[in-house]
Length: 219
Ligand SMILES: Cc1cc2nc3c(=O)[nH]c(=O)nc-3n(C[C@H](O)[C@H](O)[C@H](O)COP(=O)(O)OP(=O)(O)OC[C@H]3O[C@@H](n4cnc5c(N)ncnc54)[C@H](O)[C@@H]3O)c2cc1C
Image (cartoon, rainbow, N blue to C red; front, side):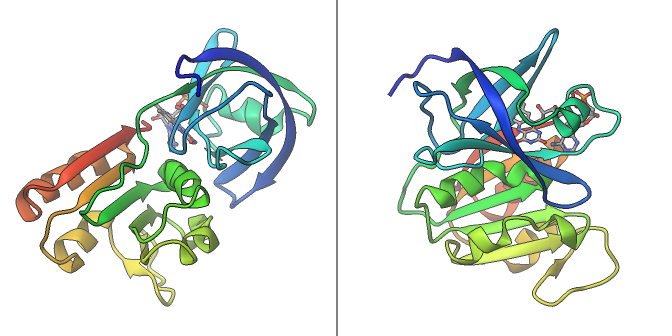
């Protein structure tokens, strides 16, 4: 597999809204492009460059990205409105946030679109993990069906909504870890907001000493 990031051009072939806050775009996969589950690409639209983690498995025929709809953003509105057929330049693959099998149980923790690398890992055959996905509204538990068949424990966490749908933890992912995860040594994989990663790292130091922590900060 090529390990150096290279430049590619790719056509937008589909856009699918996952909720009113997030959408998925599908790009054609350049023949020479290879990547590992958990890696990201850098989309460029002069002079803007933004990074996005692939949600597809490396063996899938196309490339897909899960994108938070940020109306005041610079690149996201272009991705949300570009006509099908638009060409985008990108470079990649990049990143080291890939699954490293070990004897310790894996605990994946995501906020919002930070779930992206875990979707790719699950679609690539990683199973038996615990996944906590923290969002503000239940509509943002996109990809739940992927995890229901691959995770040992799939724990959707609603941080803000006052409604409490069944089978949902009401609170932040850190609340769940403090209250509900049994003491032990784990491999934690954290992806999403910087604040979540800081808070979970503090929680791991306090409650799960000798665990490993891998992180990917989106913003
Ligand atoms: C390694 C890496 C991988 C990333 N993967 C993804 C991904 O798979 N999906 C994705 O949506 N974003 C991802 N991002 C964030 C992405 O690169 C952009 O920052 C984001 O899309 C905003 O770009 P923009 O130009 O539209 O807005 P900007 O003008 O750059 O930012 C607008 C605001 O949006 C906030 N913001 C940025 N990303 C998010 C987010 N995901 N959710 C909520 N608020 C956010 C910023 O803090 C800022 O306040 C990733 C970032 C990194 C570093």
